[in-house]
Image (spheres, rainbow, N blue to C red):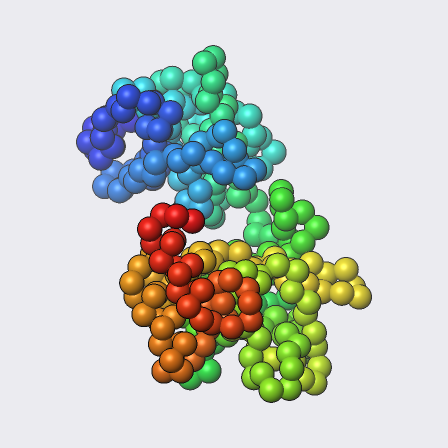
Amino acid sequence: MSCLLMMLVGMQAQADETLDYQLVYGLNEEGAEWRSVPFVAGEGQYQDRLVAQNVEFVANTEFKVNCGDTWFGGRTPDPYYLIHSEWCTNIPLASDGNNFHINEAGTYTIVLSPSTDVIFMDVIGFNTPQPETGYVLHYGKQENEWQDKAFVAGEGEYEGKLVAADVVFQPYTEFGVMCGDVWYGGMTSSSESQYWIHATWCTDIPLYAGEGVKNFIIYEGGIYTFILTDDDENKTLTVSGFNGRGDLNGDGVVDIADVNALINMMLGKVLVNPAADLTNDSRVDISDVNYVINIMLGNM
């Protein structure tokens, strides 16, 4: 480990060392910039583990794991520990072990399983990119150039489904799902021009193709993941990643701006956002204002 690398990575141990693991990675060549990413407590499938998620690696990246004054690597007689697709789970970490080395560029998730004896590591994200499935998320705003994100075969909790993950949406973004020349959207009443999706209405949405299909539209800006279930006869879509109930302007917090937005909707000054019906009574009124105020006060 070079002096440059040691300078780049702080050695500030915290009282709880499980919160002080760092992924330190870069190219082992003169002048190369090394970076560090903190491991955080995992959720969902990574419950009770530590995760450094979605880290971009260029080809031939090396890395180690740091915690306080201890550096963890791999136990191997070679100059470095080569990780590849057939050998990337339950890797025991060794203090002062050799650098880990990954040949393939890509986006990786590093998962630690700390214990009192041995820390094990899983590296996720190997091999060739997941094959595209023919389905594409097509999204944007009517006045701007639209973008595409291919659906790929899901893994883990998305096994058997198709996934377009971590897509950045601006407020009022529209989208549909394409497969070849077929456009899939939502079916609404003839009086509605768009199919609104909001925080209380975002799972198992049926997809339709053909006449009368409307674009989906999401009011809130944010980072979204789209999960497509295709069983030949029926196609459904689940959307995750909303900012949360009450955050009507999509700025990540619930505050007086959201109260003002509700009042303006009640008065007819701005377009009513379906996500503003927080009490699910099919209208926007004072009960929804009270709902947001209670969120602000921490009562909900």
